[in-house]
Image 1 (cartoon, rainbow, N blue to C red):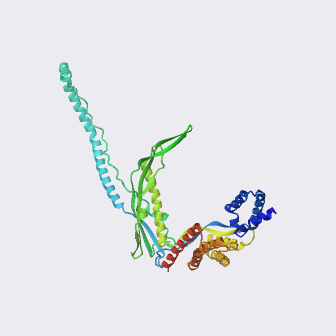
Image 2: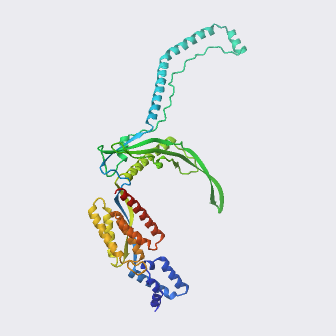
Image 3: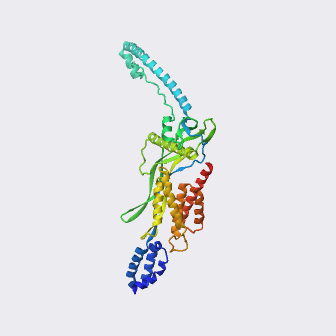
Length: 456
């Protein structure tokens, strides 16, 4: 009798999706209602009843992260006859460095010549000083003791000769010029630049020239700020102010990119703003003023920003002209249930996962697997009934299928069928999180369509 009463109480829940039945919100809501009206005799039966329906009807939508690679089409494709590229780096500051170095070498040469001359003349100067001292002492010794006393005590003069040796020659200091760093440019090109889909060969090649404008920075300086702090001790709270110190400086390594075809026709000439803006380094704050090696600090960030900028330029070139192997991280969905009701969706999920992971390296079998998954998902979507919570393909499963189809259509390069899925999703009331997923797919396909159009 008790079990039947509880069953009747939960009849409304049975009309909902099982995933909803098992959420903490629904479960504990009904438990609180029963306990509030003092239906203690029903409580044990309720727990038993929920465990029974959980075992019989449990199903939930699961997602799994899939990482795969695809070929991204160029946004500004080159003439199809161009198969090769050549990359080089030039330093805008090379002439300035050379002038400073020439001036330094000339001043150093003069200083060195003066030093050698002084060293050569030094023995003669020493001898002359010693001879002069000997003569002065002879004259001093000719004076009487009285004359010496009068000079020293009455006239307050100490005229006793002192040996005046010339200073030991030393080379005049010539400050080394502040030169911007030069690099092994061919090695940098080989390390960082790879126009995917093209060969690194000079025959009928596009010419890529990257210009360095040099590492630029401000001297690191120490700053501080005062914070209101609270300490608790012996049961009392005390407010106080604490000073925190940190080191800060700005830096940049501006670069530009120029691309020309074999005839010299300019295809691209840009100085990316991202590489022209100063970045700011700020150390962690400490109550103790930091002790830093300024030269070592700025040098370490020169290497860091050099690598970042070269990678940025390589990505820019590949986005414009290359056929870049691009990694994509996404989610695929399946339905987990006790029985075989959703076996078709699980098989499709496994087929799609396997196909996506080998989309580039084993294209034909991969596309066959993805096509099989597409067929299964499309067939299931025909059964969709977003208004019936008891339907096999209810609202939540429908949305999950739509996202799976969008992913598969993207991987297969099928924007036309993707538009149909977007139309379906636009007719369904979806959550904010699902809306963000849909918007990310819309942005993905908008970019894809532009690239397809550019590539004719």
